[in-house]
Image 1 (cartoon, rainbow, N blue to C red):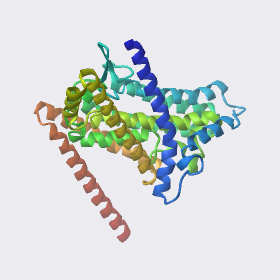
Image 2: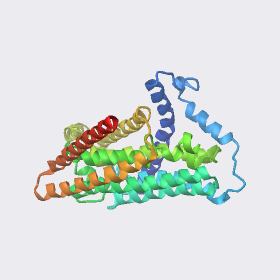
Image 3: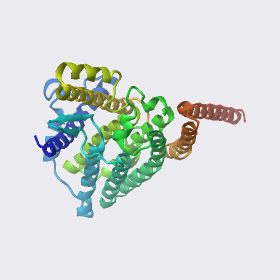
Image 4: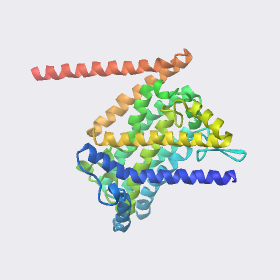
Length: 381
């Protein structure tokens, strides 16, 4: 088969799997919420409620497609379209597996392999906030505009810390290519072992970028009704909601690549050698790649489950608390992590970034103690 056709099939497969997982994430979210809150969740449409996403899609399609009289019509349509487009583009550079041998050609399990992969992800994710801003502004509704402003300021605040957390990974791997970063973690040498603080910062910022609880203030019901999508209905609202689930998928995939070895797993060399020796070079290599893809998707699905678990467990922040955490907490911690990572590379002590964890814990304990003493003095006065 022509390698170009194989590559096209891989791209279409990745796109289709992304949409399928995002679709059934809406079902899984309600199942997880039902389990955590001791209720049933969807169980009427199909076995175990598996047809519920299709029922939701049908409901969205047949709802009245309302556009406010004073809204800017074209921008009102463009906002959710841009949010959906950027969400779908983010997974293009993610390596979901090693490679397939097709005839005499080697085809990578990746839509496009570029040496600026993580930079591409950042660029596309940054564009996503325009979809929220345009939708909120075009609605000609003050609650929508306030929600859009919140979304923009939140994304800008947390993108800084996220970028700094990734700089530590780039320093260690020496490349912006996601495939190179993943291959550098071969043999169980995962970055999470050397970048615990970077991982916590990146994960927190990923929640903020996806507008997930406890960072879902752009659509706060008690203060802003629906926030930036207050005036939206039908499939335009569906695009905004669906883009959030696609962003969760992309964030989980990038997290797996940066910190959990991507498609690498312990003992993969032994498995591949055994398969090649028993099934031949091409067949054994291809089956080993398929196992690596399954491992990668297992990590992604666990990441999506973690997003849902946090949403139905933690309370929401106030907006000032959210800004304080971003500017006064995460950004200084990320800068400290970059400095200690650089020092660790110079001194050939990769574990030195763990010192950043200890420093951050010590500062948090001292601040908590000082805050308690301040409250006691205020009560006595």
